[in-house]
Amino acid sequence: MIEINENTLNHITSDNRNFGPELEELKQTEIADLNFHLKYYRSLVNFINSNPENKIIREK
Image 1 (cartoon, rainbow, N blue to C red):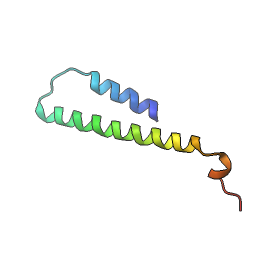
Image 2 (cartoon, rainbow, N blue to C red):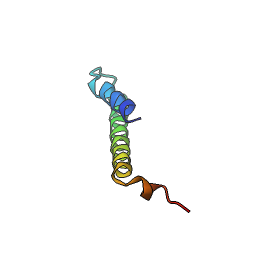
Image 3 (cartoon, one colour):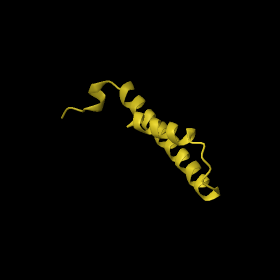
């Protein structure tokens, strides 16, 4: 998921075509959304990886 979002973000940010102000605003919104999700997913992955398995799965 992270790689897909990074590829999408790179594709959107590298596109230099001018579609007008309305679509440029949408482009900036998409970039901000992807940045947020990438940070969220990375944080989640880092959190999960930083905890030992026995803390994640609690035995009954």
